[in-house]
Amino acid sequence: MGTTAGTGTSTVKALAGPPQVAVEEEGKPTEEGESLEVPRSVEVTYKQIDGKVRVVPIAVSKSQDPLTVAEEVLEGRYDKSQGLIINETFEEQPLDLGDQEAEILEEDVPVDPVPVEQAPTPEPEQAPTALTPTPTPTPAPEPSVETAPESAPDPTAGKTVSELAQEVGITEQNFRETYPDLSRRADERARSTEAEVDPRTGLPGFSLPQNLKKGKPGYRQTQGITFASDLERAAYSATTSTRSEPGKRKRDSYRKLLEDDGYTSTEINTMGREIRSQMRDQYDGAGSELSVDLNKDQLLPSDFEDDITADASGFIPQVQFTEQEAEVALPKKEKVKFNNHKKNPIKKGAVRLNLGSAFSKEGVPGKLFVQTLHPIKRAGAPDYGKAHSYGRAFTLRNATFSVNPFAKTIIRSKADNKYPMASVDGDVVTDAEPNLDGEVLSFNPFANDSFVDSQGRVVTGADEVTVYGTKAYARGNIQYADASPEVVTASEILSLARQGKKYVHPKFHPKGIDLSKLNENSIKKT
Image (cartoon, rainbow, N blue to C red; front, side, top):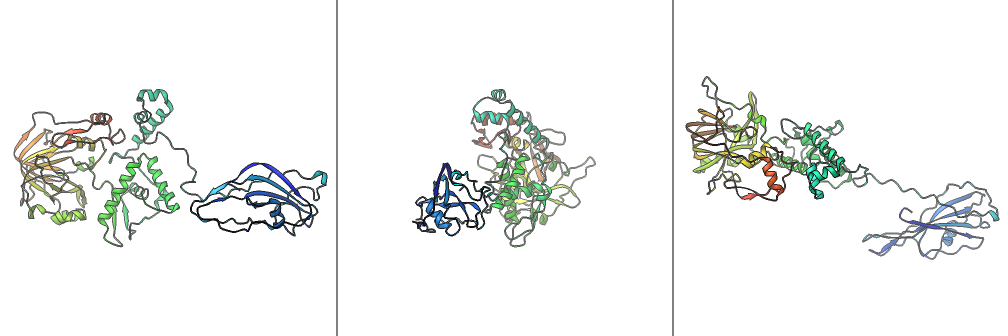
C-alpha cells in the first residue's frame, strides 16, 4: 500500500488444517472523525490445485490474523497439503480522515494472478524463504496545478540586484561580491527586459503563442470581446476566477507567459482590474460588443505628435469633432456630467485631459480627447479627485498653469500613466465657443517640465486660454517664468522611499504621499 512503511519481513507457513473464521466483518464504516487504519499488505505464496505456484497480495486489517484471512480468501483454490506462505512486509499506520466517512473494503484477489517462476512443487527442505514483494505501483496523479512538474523558480525573477540585497539585509556591493552568479542573472534579466520594451508604451512587448491565440473568452453573457492586442487577451485570462483544475492550469499558463516576459504579479493584477473596469463600463446586457485597450486612457508620447497647431501663414485650426461625438466618446458613467458647467456653472476651475475619452476619427491624425473640469480647493490647488463637468473644450480667463512635479516624474518614468498631473486653472467662461486663436502652448510630460510656448519658453499665466486636445491657446497678455520650473527626479523620489519618508509638496501633497510601494522596478532613474 502506498501509505505504509516496510519494517522487515516475517514468514508464516500453514500446513494442512481446517480454515479459521475471520474475526471481523468487512465493509463497516468507521465513526465520523476517527482515524482509519490503513490495512497492511501481505503476500501469499501458494500452490494451486493444478500444480502451479502463485503469489498474490492480500490486505489485512490490524485485528485480523494474516493466515486466517488468506485461508478464507483462497478457500478451494490452493493445495492444502502444501499450505500457505505468508510474507508480511508492511506495518499498519493510521490515516487521519478528519470529518470524512470511510470504509475498509477487502482488496480483490486477481482471478488470474501473475505466477512466480519457481519449481512446480517445492521440496520440503527447500521451502521458499521470505519473498520480497513487488510494491504495487502508485497510479500517476491526475495532472493539476499542484502536481504539474515545473522547474524551480528563479529567485532573481522580477528583481534588481539592489532589491535582492535589501531582502538579505546587505549592501548591493556586498551582495555582488557574495552572490556573483545571482547578480549576473539579475543583471542579464534586467537587460533582456529593457531590450524588449515596446517603445510606444514603455512596457514590455508581448505576443501569445499560436496555440493560445485561438481561444475566445467571454464576459458575463457575451462572447463579443475585441482585445487590442495579445497583452490584453493574456492579462484577462491570467486573472480569471475559477474553481476547476483545468481552468486553474490554463490561467497559470497565461500568467507564467506574462511573468516570463517581464511583467510582475502586481502589474498583471492591475492590468486585469483595468480590463474588467472597461468591460463593466461597456456591458449593456447579453450580446454586448466589448472593446478592451490598456492604452485607451493612458498618456503616451505619441499622443503629442499630431496635435493641430497654427502655422506660419496665420491659419487658425478648428475643433475637429462635434459636441455629439464628444459625448459619445465619454465612458458611460461620465456622460451624465457632459456640459454640466453650462447648467451648473462654477466660478473657478481646473481643466485637464480626460484620458478615458480618447478616440479616433477618420481623416484626423492622432487621438482626440474630451476635457474634464475640476473644482478648485479652498487652498487654491485643483481638486483632481472630483469632476464637475466634461466638454470638448473649455475657455478660462486669468489663467494660470499647474504642473505637479511628482506626478510628472511618475508618468515620465512610466511608473503610472494615469496620475493626475497638470491643468490650466482660472475663471470658467460658461458659454464661450472653442477659440483656437492665439499663442499655442504645449505641455508634454515626456519632454517638458512645464507649459511652454512655440519657442520653448516657460509660461506661467495668460489673460485668456482655450484648452483643446493636448494644447492650450493663449490670448492677451502672456506671463513668462523668471526661473526654471520646479523639478523632482526619480532618484530623489527613490531616495525618500528607501528612507521610509513621504514626498511633501505645499500645493499638491501638503500631507505627504506614501512612497513605500515604489522601487527601481516601478520607477526608472531619470
